[in-house]
Length: 337
Image (tube, rainbow, N blue to C red):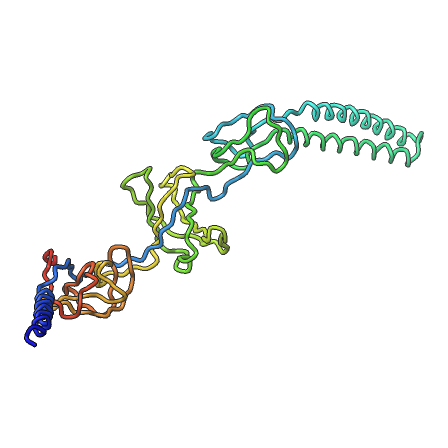
């Protein structure tokens, strides 16, 4: 009988030692990282990427089908409104104009003779009317053909800079095909692409902070001037226009990182975002972990605003261990700043 009791006593002894070890471990302070609840500015940002473009871009296209005889400008050239940009082959049109000029001269002479004869009574009113009508028609045809010849010179529709050129001598152009794009560097804007989930928070008048790798260390401050009413269902995004002043002088096509400030508050209670777990934080009171339910305001990648549940100066656990329990003793890895 005594031999049968030894295994049971051994099991009880092992269980007791394990329990003592477990209690000893649970009673030992858990090392944690901590941070103080501070006050500071809370800013809610919407991130987007954008690029610089002209406010009023002008596409240059020909109105007739013809080969290109000469291109008179290059990308980056400044042009004036009405300036010739390229010449089309106009030999055929000029030949037709020469023919119509001769017809107009003949019809005008016939009209003059008929007028003289009509005044002297040697011809009828009907004959004079017909000569006058033929003369007017011939001159009108000449004017129309001269306009067609003028269409063989493609001109600038605005004063600005040649942003893009997609035509070379010898190309055959057709009506509606973009040959060049013009823009005014003094009237530029940034078009940013904003995710459709964020667009309800964006509206005209909000401040925008922009930066680019091309200008390291520089922050460009501006504001939203327009949110396009229609989004792109393929990209699931909307376009947002951000104004630029003449002082910025950014090149067209430059890409920018855009942060739109949708909300901001000064003197907000802030905790590290990494201290939040499912709307709760672990505060430290008398060396022990205490679970606190908090109400969250503006949430950022590094800091989050606390509307209620904490006070300034309290210490909270950053990246709390998964096994942290209410009342556990804690030891600070780092002194709370």
